[in-house]
Structures are given as structure tokens and as C-alpha cells.
Length: 460
Image 1 (cartoon, one colour):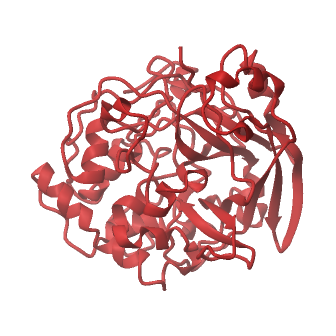
Image 2 (cartoon, one colour):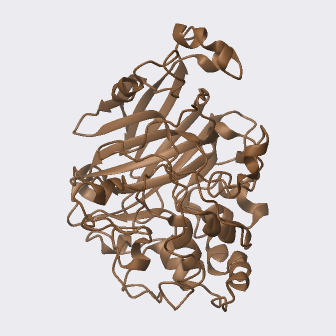
């Protein structure tokens, strides 16, 4: 699908861009949604059971209407039913990390912590008979946003407003006003949004089922209305670039983590907090990492990927490639998969030894970087121009601004990852494995300005 008008080239309003991730409509038949029915939304056993710290998707792209900034969106708490309240964990830290050196170490980290604000909101209590769950789920939340860089921390927002779910006119009248209230200006020209939004995940059933399970499922013709809890930033590129020079050092790596305050939780972190969730590239954990290691991957930091004995060998020889290739009736690319190493661990550059001969999003393209480590991050070249006609298949269809060069809300990352697993763009792959006119899980249009996310889906 292509769009041509000035506004629709980003908004995709004709098709909409709120998306959901169910593989089949059978999940609608009962109150409990089962593991294994989505893409990044349930990527490891532990986070499947611990919804509040489950990162669903991560996006990073040049802001189309403020092109001197980058927008980053980290979504958590998957499969939120319409008209139901969900809360961030007040005992967790949610963080977005920026690596501008290619070492896997965060040069800048943005940290959210949450608090419940006293008594339940009166309007929500009046609507209590329509809600499920404990009364404390109806309590408003606030957040503190802290920036960590250069060994120092700075509080950017105190007592920030968290936009709740839209629970109808009785409980949340004039919901667009609540969305506007949740968008805050930051020192230095940035912005932040925190709260509920329609799940913007974009793909189709055929691609999801092939990538996850190596099995062809019947196509789903319409979406399933679900929401997520979003952490969104719009940050000047100069704040993210190495040395503050976005022209000389345009490439950054991005990932999001959640860490829980518990002495009994395993993982990296301080004595008080342990990392329990990690997300960079979409689908990486559940497609590249073996099932028995996925919980461990969620506890690892990128700066340990090269020496850790898990991330690099799993990328060079992923079992799922053979499963998918069999279903696609094509030959699986032979290991070692240096193409996947480029895509996921180093970024694309002609200065490496990978088979994809293109300078796109490796940290080696930064003037002040001479050596990098193999680390799993979502890499973005901030100097890539905003596409006049964005293509949902990104790089594979010649749109250099699309995934895997960052990720936009309109990118069909499941299909792109599926095709890359089968060898594109280094080789012929299987570009016709998913028809380009297949229906996508789209329900509501994203917006044309920050935070771009559609308003929450409501029932009725």
C-alpha cells in the first residue's frame, strides 16, 4: 500500500493504523487469552505471566512534522480490553535507552516511575459496576520522568499525568482533553506522553502465524480492538547524538527495559532493581532466541550480547528460519547468517563483512566511532530523509526510512522479519510469501502529530 497526499503519507488515514495482534478470532471466545496468540506481545514465559512489565512493541522514527526530533514509543501491558482500566507497576522502573557509540551501553536513559494518587477517581467509582478487577485499579496514576546521562540524573517531569483508558462518557467525559493533558513539554524542546492508546501494531494473520509458528493460518479479515499502555518521547536529535552532533553522528541504537524492585527477582541491575523485560527489534526474542532462553534474554543488557554466548550464536543460526523455509517451500539460507547479524546486531554498513552491501544504520557511520560491538538494538539513522511515499515493507521495498532503519507505526515488521529470515535483502528470499494486498489488523487511524498513537479503542 502506498499513499501520496501530504497528510496521508504519514497518517494512512484511509486504512487506519491502530492494529492488534491476535492470530485467530478464537481468542474472542473466552475471557482468558492464551499465550502464543500474538507477536512481540508475549515473547517469554515469565513476562506472559507478568503483564505489567511485558513490553509489546518499540518504535523509533524521525518525527514527520518536527524533523529535528526523534519520536520513540515503548508500549507495555498487552491485550488490554476496551473500557477497562490498567495500571503501570508502582514497584517497577520503565526505561528507554539510547546507545550512540555502538558499544551496547546507554549514553542516555529516560526512566519512568509511577505512583498511585490517593483515592479512586469519583467518576470512575460511579462507573464501578461496569468495571472488572479490584477497586485500586480505578486509582489515577502519576509519574516521574528522569533523564540519566554522563553519570548524572535530572528530573524532567514530576507528578506527570497518566492518561487512563477511555471508559465511556460517564467515567471519562471529553476523553480527547485527557489525551491533551497527558502531553507535556520537556526542557530543551522535547515532549512526553504517558497513558493508554490503541495498540498500533501493524501486520496480518498470515505473516504472524508463519513467523511465530511456521504454520499457515487462515486470514483474519478484521482487527480485534485492544489497547496498550504507552511511553512516548519526542526528543531533539542533538540530545541523542554522540557529542550532540546529529549530522556527524546520526546513528543511534534504542531499546526499552522494565526492572522490578524485588530482592528475589533475577537479572541485571542495581541491588534494588532487577531487569525483567527487554525489547529492541520486534520479534527478536520469540523468533531468534530459543524458547528455554527467552526469560534469560529479558534479563540481559546489550553490552553483554557479544560475549554472553546466547545472542550472537542464536542470530547466526536461528532454528525458526528452517521451520519457516519449509512452509514457504524455499531453501533456508545456510548458517552462519551474517545477513541477520548485520540486521540485528551491527546495523548495515559497507565497512563490515556482511552480505548486505549498503550504508544505512550502523554506528560505524558515525564520524566519532571507529569500533563497535555486536549488540541487539533497534538502530536508527536520524539523517535518513522522511519518505515522501512510505512503504509498509520498508527497506525490502526500497523505503530506506522504514524498518529495520528504526521502526514507524505503519511498518509491517512481522512480514519484513519473515522475509529477512528467509534471506532478504541479501538474497532472493521469498518476497511473495505474504501478498501485499493482504488485510492488516487495522482499526483506528493514528494521528498526524505527537504522540501519533490513536485514542484508546472503546466498546460500543
